[in-house]
Image 1 (spheres, helix red, strand yellow):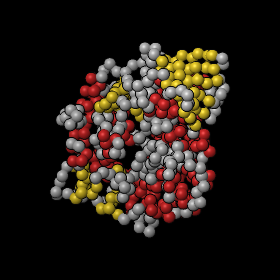
Image 2 (image 1 turned 45 degrees about the vertical axis):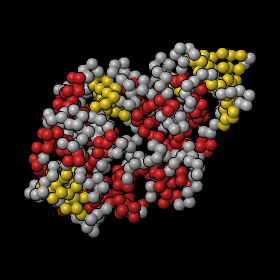
Image 3 (image 1 turned 135 degrees about the vertical axis):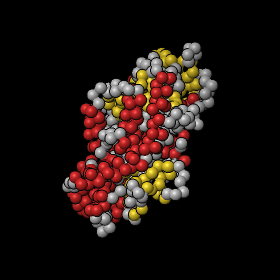
Image 4 (image 1 turned 30 degrees about the vertical axis):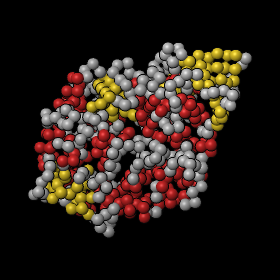
Length: 545
């Protein structure tokens, strides 16, 4: 059964949603839902005191992906995001005070448990199908999560098995499923700490480790960079340029996984319904980023409501951010977050939120926005492109000119003197040979057969480089060389290149950019991944009008 075959109906007898195929006898209420817990109900009571009272805490409340609320089977006319935009800082602070003083009563907990127990009972058939079905999908994989996990574990038994753990609901479910299916609590877990997780996420990760002492747990983070300092240099990430993921998540995690000696089978909590790009993923595939990694996604076709059905049925501990109303629990500064997530962050993560809000206002002033507060409050900063208004954007430019008397030669002028990093940047092209003549250095790149491809001529501590193509079938070779010059000009040791390398050959250590030529396979993915050759240069590139 695929997600598109499903609809969410309402069981008025049990007063809960039902996950079913087409059913003409029941009322369809949504394509997908998530449960609304007591903490979020209390927030809604405070936001809409003219419409809701304390009896709302006892109702069966569920939310759509658009954050519309189904109450006892009917959609109610409240739009929290609109209310948030109309609130001033004093009103928000009053709401926050009321929310944080909320004390949950025992009768409310009992009513919530009753609602969720009815939901579990009403959807028991769906639960068993998700876990145990031995039918095959269009890819030939088991639909049931447990037989799927067992079959792929057996198929890739020679690999290290691990779970990619984010602290979110999906990876929580996959973690439990994998350990249950394999009857093994000692499956390696890896948590990518972006340093920008919600407070409750850190609490949950710590709690998970304490409650699962036999589960080996790695925490990976970028120790070299600070998010706010990088925002000062290159501006905040946007929906167009989400530079933060490569630097603070996929880079550190990818480097760790790529440096395992053995091949790997990674179970992910990825689901196709999360985004258009993820809808194209296969259930089992070779990782496009790490050559030695196969990835398997047991819940790839599950709905949000399926995930919650499993969590509630198995009585799993989970991230309390969901109780507060967060639909997703990634980085709290993410430009892909909506107004609802911002409202919740301003309440439950107020100190960091205020710091971020003030940064955005000052940044908006810095780049010349007259309506800077509206620019921030309306979320226009999320759509920004390039480094317009930033001094750093002028430093990424590389000047070049043709050499009139020499064929296939160009001279490039960099923005800083050549140093050791410069040599590292050309290792991905091939074997490096350096010759010194009359204080002029020749850096020659050789292919695997020791044939020269091109050479760079420069003086030590100078910023001029002459490039001569000697023999190359790559018609874009000058463009790729210039991308490395862009990288040299722009490099902030952000570790973005780490995430592009499938073999873990690239890393940053003590402010040095290093390419391990023993691991490098000359695939040039570290050059080709970013349109300017460098994540920072790409983020700062100003679109020409």
